[in-house]
Length: 247
Image (cartoon, rainbow, N blue to C red; front, side):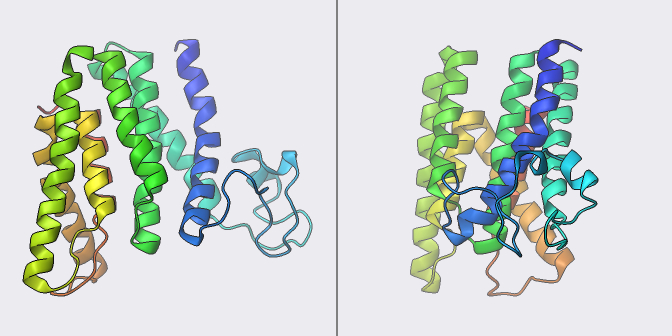
């Protein structure tokens, strides 16, 4: 593999560690960049050697070095998930994009942000602007970098995606008297349009809806008036459509 591929795999667990931090802190409106990582039981700030992704968890045997409280398993799981996304991006780049390292980095970064959005939405039914709006701008920047001739199409797709969900949300509220689609869902679909273009909007909405309903049925959470987070389904559909050239 090229050095850039090894660098992506090395960076992935650190990205996963930061993603896990976002998933924990954003729903609680806690500082993300200005507060050190701490043990969730004793509150002691973690030292640098305790923050090495995967390795520190293994060396500490899953426990705090001071109070010996168990470290939540979602920390290494997020790091492994980010590593898996990086590996999948490299494999997809080798299969469909002539081992394009730049495409692999874009794919992994897109997947990491979408993973955070999906998990935050699952926890608190919210898709934070601090992630959806940079994701939208990142999609337009990626298009300008990779395919500048398509930038107008992707910008129009972003606007169309946002308008579509805002209209559907307004119609649902008029009919049912309550919100059915949040503004965060509209902004996430706008971001999908920025990354995928107009041709990706329909498949993302369809696959996202099927994944959402399927997940609700499997988990036994489907009721006629159930409140279901749409973000995870949209996020998964967006990444899948980006990764696999089905169009």
